[in-house]
Image (cartoon, rainbow, N blue to C red; front, side):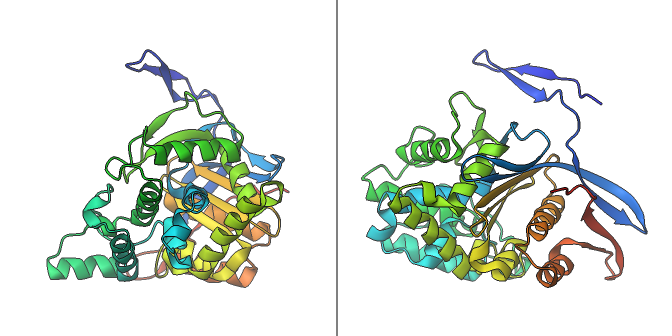
Length: 357
């Protein structure tokens, strides 16, 4: 079945496609109840090597998406390559926090505040908005105290701290570091064009939830960039060191990447340096698999987080990155089971039989 293509005019005269004229995405993630499939999410996915070879693709992987927070590990490369990380003595935990979509626990907030203090800055210098912690325990603690969440609680405050570190180190304005024409943002676009081997001129642009510019990039280009993080052997020695440093930092600090009992942190804790997994809003995940030199990118069409977690875990399982026992622990904790309010198991979330290598 083809979906009708419609268009919408823009103020600059260009046209944006609202619906792509293409067949439905081939991957189905099913949500069951009582043995019946109750809901279905659709998705696309691609696995790439560091030379741009497509190992496996499902669906329209040329289609541009907003990678959202799923490319934070790539963006962190700029903090290190500019010399900012070393100049301000960033530890492995802070490098991991640059890559994080943290859940606003006290360990995350304290680390951001101390980092900013070292820069001579404060929470008000962050240009991300205040956000109630994703972690329920932390959110409830704030509410009980009658305290308002701050910008440090924002799940992207680590990334923003990294951007501020780069701006100060490079002698650039701190105010407005999130603007598209700020050198900090221009470096991020240039890096993605380099790693993804893609021209982003004229691509769709928008603003992320934390206020930084986002750009549309093909799924396969994002996977290629992650593959180069996993296998940087074709890059300069200095960049190879940067890639290894990021992977090691995230593997050593899984709690920093998201939070207590959170899917992303659980996977990192199980896989160590064998996998750098990173989620993004609206059903996006990326992964760098160093031992196999592979990069992965997935996108769930409707943005469903429950589907994206189930799908990326299934892929990692099929690639042998997550063993069966580890997958079982992760699935039963946060991914697979559908339970009612009494705690009774009533169904499951599962990718349908789509994997064929």
